[in-house]
Image (tube, rainbow, N blue to C red; front, side, top):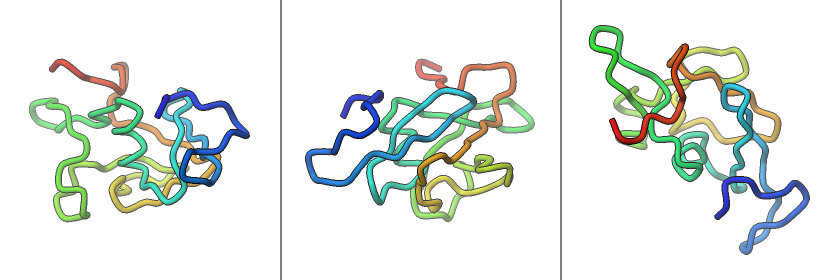
Length: 106
């Protein structure tokens, strides 16, 4: 799945993609995907950092147990990305101020 699917196109399995805004960057989600799944599919592996050591965190357990995937959704902080269904127009904000949301290679 290309990360920048044009609006109005359909996924091979049907349904229209949802557009999400991650710190101002547009990403797309498949119908029925969670925010966490959409972020990982877009290549974003971490979207917050630990308080003490500043270590990157993202999707870990994927079932809402560990709280590593907390993200701000439409102004509501501390939402578990693995449980929140993606919706068109959703605004996501990372907990990585002043740093890129994608911290691959760390």
